[in-house]
Picture (tube, rainbow, N blue to C red):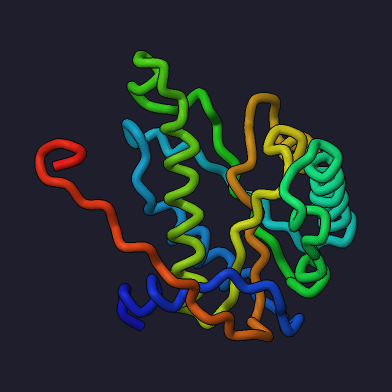
Length: 190
C-alpha cells in the first residue's frame, strides 16, 4: 500500500469482527508509532497494550463516566447517545501515553503542548500502519486523560493521548468530506 492510499484510506472504525490481532501485529504498529517526530527528540510517549477483560472494563467504565459528566455538564446532545459498543468488539486496544514535561523548548515560551503533539503524531503513525495491515482503528479521546492514565497504572504525571481500539473492521465507513485547506503565502491572510 502506498502512503497516500493509507492516509486517504484510514477511517475511524466503530465495528470490529472480533478476529484476533497478534502480538507481532501490535508490536509492528508500535514500532511505526515510535518513528514519529518529537520536540528535541525527547520521544515522550509510552504504550499500554490492553487485552485483558479487567483492563478493558476499566477503560469502558471511564469512558461511560466521562460521557455522563459531559451530558450532566450541558455538553452536546449527541454525547449522551454515543455508543462505546465497539470497545466490546475490538480484541485489543493500545493506549498512547505521554509525559507533558517532555515538551521541548516550547516550555520556555509557555507552550506545553509539544509532548501531546508528539504523542499525537505517534497515534497517527500507529493508525496508518494499522490501515496498511488491513486493521481498523479509532482514536478514542472521550475520557479524562489523567484519570485514564491512573486507571492504567501509569506513573504520576503521565497522561493518555488516546486509546486506539484495533481489529479487523466489520464496516467500511465512507470518507467524510474534507474542507478546503486555508493556505496563505508569507503571512496569515495573504
